[in-house]
Image (cartoon, rainbow, N blue to C red; front, side, top):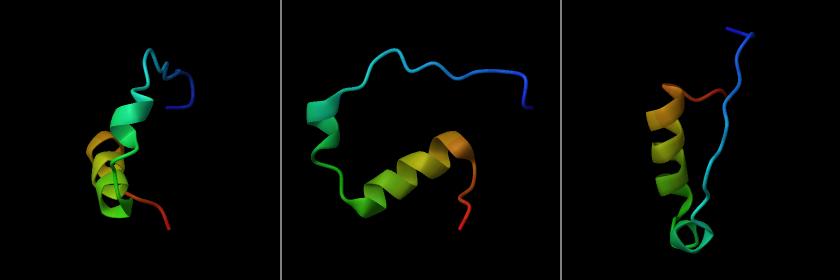
Length: 37
């Protein structure tokens, strides 16, 4: 669907500093459903 927006209301920067690359991918897949390479 190209006719909608996603709005970020809050970013917890300090919490995300502890994430490694694997954690970032895991969270991306959780919200996106899949990963494009």
